[in-house]
Length: 239
Ligand code: SAM
Image (cartoon, rainbow, N blue to C red; front, side, top):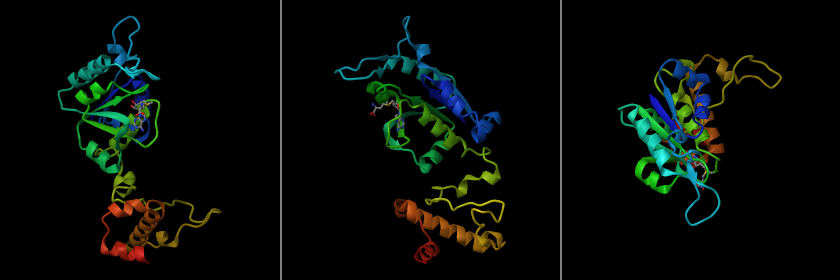
């Protein structure tokens, strides 16, 4: 998979993607990340990438042309069609379902804003989708882009080892994940739940499902409205 990042600080996103499983994806050739800096495409001695907003008010707005030229360069670098995503607090909230959809694509171009954001005309003309990583405002889109890169890359085939398989993670089946334990069995902070030591796989699966359902009900009851629950799940919830 190829992801191009258009940003005034492309190295920042590259650094975020240099560690752990995502870093390994890069090393294995499963992810190639490319940065494009609009300043390299800006004109004049000062290589301006922003200007004052029409209508007045505080802050600056990112200019159309350096961004458009960066987008063009990113598109021209690879003939495969790319989806252009603008990271924006006004976008659709990022969900695991959206991450999975994006992970099914071969190319993404992530556009990171700074200042007050990007000239609206560029968004209208060039952006396929706006994505937000939450209802708060960051000073730039780079952290949001790094979140997308990380969440998407770990779902690409071959990136996670079996032991780290994503299928049991929170949100994958609409629920939160169950709690996890490792050695030692006995510790001053408490014992490991006995069922996990029983070797009875059916009992363990039932316990985990019950924990996932209970946690979701306690912490994120909104998810239960959307999750597809089996008859057995409903029985467990009623217990
Ligand atoms: N004036 C904009 C607004 O209120 O919608 C906020 C601009 S913000 C200071 C600068 C840039 O940070 C945005 O252009 C966007 O790329 C990024 N950004 C900020 N918050 C974000 C969020 N929650 N999700 C994704 N990107 C965000």
